Amino acid sequence: MITTALTKMFRLEHPIVLAPMGGVSGGRLAAAVSNAGGLGLVGGGYGDPAWLRTELSRVKGETSRPWGVGLITWSVDTGLVESVLGHRPHAVMLSFGDPRPHGAVIKAAGCKLICQVQDLAGAQLAVEAGADIIVAQGTEAGGHGGGRSTLPLVPAVADVVAPIPVVAAGGIADGRGLAAALMLGAHGALIGTRFYASDEALGHGLAKRCIVAAHGEQTARTTVFDTVRDMAWPAPYTGRGLRNRFMERWHGRERELSAALDAERGPYQAATREGDLDTAVVWAGEAVDLIVSVESAATLVRRIGAQAERQLTMGANLAQGRSGGSTRECDT
Image (cartoon, rainbow, N blue to C red):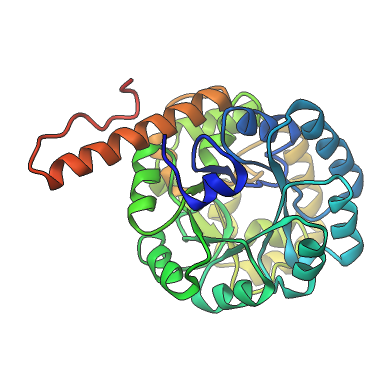
């Protein structure tokens, strides 16, 4: 078993955190990850109160282990945060914006505060907010994020915020990535796209199959999907998704898209309802190359944890001059 500050804080069997993907990480998926020994986070997204009540009730009813919820910082107010805290999560994760206004409220409720950051300035704000865990998210991540890469960002954040534990995110989909994150100074990994392609994830089944079939170079960062959805994401955040016809048509032409919203908004909404993924977005990270099937969340947690243990043992053997073994995800 791998023991880190993260696993000790939440009594986890594996240093794995489910990314709170909006519209994907519902209560069922969060509970499945927690029941398997990770930390499941419900994706609260933009803060729909009715959706949150349903999904937070579901996770509470399906696990007795620690769980949490993630919120988009710039999109929520104190009332929504207090409503979420009323469900008594073990952790609240704030991403994309200054966490300080909400940090005190979360901490006063006896809840652990997790802050996701994309640069060193954000890491400093997380420290000031009183974060118990800081997630350093690299640009390889699916969905919204910044411009810095995971490999150099994680140790840089770890150095700046020590002794606060850091969790790595962005481009991690198997035990090799988790082991690498630990060697960079992180205490665990926050994993999203790999869990999107799971049985328990919300979202269209075709989207999951698209993730399985995709390659990393078929993803790109863009703002066109936010534009067509009237989502006023602040700079510098962009979203990484699978390339499709809509992205190819409008990427680099965002001003023209804004001018054409009256014509484009309705068809885009219809495409989302109908699962037309030539138009609707599938948020996904560069690690899609490593995803070869849709599986249960419990299988994923346990396999990623076990593979990370093997990788760390192999690394120790290399340091001692002993030969290692195979590193493929499918090895048991």
